[in-house]
Image (cartoon, rainbow, N blue to C red; front, top):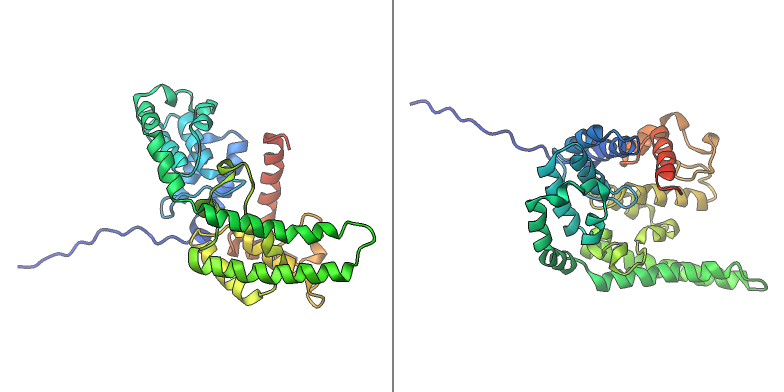
Amino acid sequence: MIFLLISCAEKKECSYIEDYYQLVYEAEKAYYLEDYQKVFDKMSAATSSCELINQTMIYEMEKYAESAAIIGKKKKALELIKELILNGYEIDQIEDNEAFSSILKSQEWNKIKYDYSDLRKEYLNNINLELREQISEMQNADQYYRQRLKDKNINRDSIWEKINRTDSINDIKLKNIIEEFGYPDYRLIGGYNIDQRNVDPGILLFHFDDYDYYTKTLKNLIDKGKAPPQSLGNFVDSYQRRVPEQKKFIYGIYDNVSPDEIIDYAKLDKRRKSIGLAPMKLKKSVDSLRRIYYNL
């Protein structure tokens, strides 16, 4: 007897750099242009092999949910609304969102609403509030002496010694956190609605100097969807700015930098995409649309 071995095609292993981020940037642009079908299609493609995340400033999970509701994909919209709650959204945020108005009349929504307390508890149980407070303290320490540089009649050399000492301590702390917990983003330490504070380690990366550690570690985490692409771009270009022999930038994260200040400008977009950042033209387009949309 001959047996035919038929194997089911396995889901492709996700590389967020290759399979996710660029589609999300295109979806975000489509959202601001009110092309909700395109948002849905791009996000569906992005999540065909990668788990959906909800990056700060982009909030693709919310945009995906809204677009699904608007184009009549009720089942998917309800699934995504539940995910939003499990990612920290409060019930008022859902009920006040006009995009969900038709969904909120359904029995399925009533079931989610009934389960809200348990869903909220599940979210809070997964948030490390102690670590959130530690990151907040590190942020405050990072800025304290830098703000003192604005004072008149100060000993700037003394202040810079304290800044450098604080940066060294924060560097050690963040490395330990990353090694033990992973990159401390909203999934680990919660978002703004936890305590109405913007707690994020991103600002710390502007002031660290361990190039080998952060470039390798962050690139790996970014490709797994565990750290935001801008974390690496911010670290590298801020490092370039501080080191005298490295006068030009690599990823173009600063808006006030001219093309001649960027290394091999013709290959800028290739480098940006290689770490999950949007190509510059798309970035500028999305930034402009976002400012208009949110009246910034």
